[in-house]
Amino acid sequence: MGTGLKRKDLLGTRDLSPEEIGLILDTAISMKEIASRDIKKVPTLRGKTIINLFYEPSTRTRTSFEIAGKWMSADVINISTSSSSVVKGETLKDTGLTLQAMHPDVVVIRHSAAGAPQILAGLLKASVINAGDGAHEHPTQALLDLFTIREKRGTLAGLKVAIVGDILHSRVARSNIFAMQKMGMQVRVCGPATMLPRYMDRLGVEVFSRIEPAIADVDIIMMLRIQLERQGGGLFPTLREYSKLFGLNLDRLKAAKQDVLIMHPGPINRGVEISPEVADGPYSLILNQVENGVAIRMAVLYLLAGGQAAAN
Ligand code: CP
Image (cartoon, rainbow, N blue to C red; front, side, top):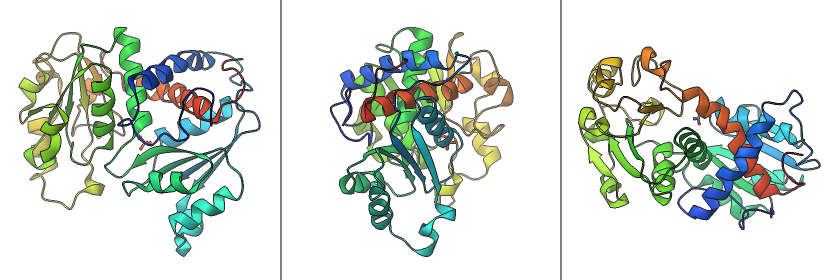
């Protein structure tokens, strides 16, 4: 178990305390400084082994966990399930026990099934980090989102955010709702009725069926991708109509505050949920989110796996 977080695994934001979230965000500040050095290498996790076990595609999360581990001198092994014994029918349990026999310190897992990281955590001595499980949670994404907002606004408490799009299938929305509320933010969700789960009002968020009132007086607009890969179809007529009703473009942005921050976890569907002018515009934090993903994942790896003092 690491020196900083009094837990073996990071499975979600739902069970993190505000103090734990604060510790991760504060630790990420010194981790981010390493990115600006000529030599991006510290001995913090020397001798530690990290396995990235991704059952679903990923660009940002997998790459940033790999960079984070390597910058801290850990040995990082990436397993793509399409070229592993998973294609021969090996179960999650057997894959986990096989990896455990090689003594990793951390296993980072992404899986299409909600709860898969929890199952693995129960089997392994290694710390398990959830890199996204089905529509359940994506805790490091929420943490990097909070870090990005705090970096821009200097605080989190009291800020208002509208999360817009495919809420039903979004692990990013769920992890952000839990984490943002713990840090004193007010959360709204907005999307077609078919993409707004019924339990949303029980989570203490405001629910909007139209985008204009949802974004009218918020500090942050977080747009989400339509997750066609998780849908059975029929949740909206066409992408064109979805874009017309819920897409964020320059014209629609006039309904928001002048200095509103625009976020998106990526990958974006340009011209569907967000227009290129907004995605690439002055208030877009999309690439800041990606950059901060490395710092947050360094912080989480360090706090779970321990090692020498950070940033040396
Ligand atoms: N935001 C996010 O999880 O992106 P990837 O699927 O590219 O990792």
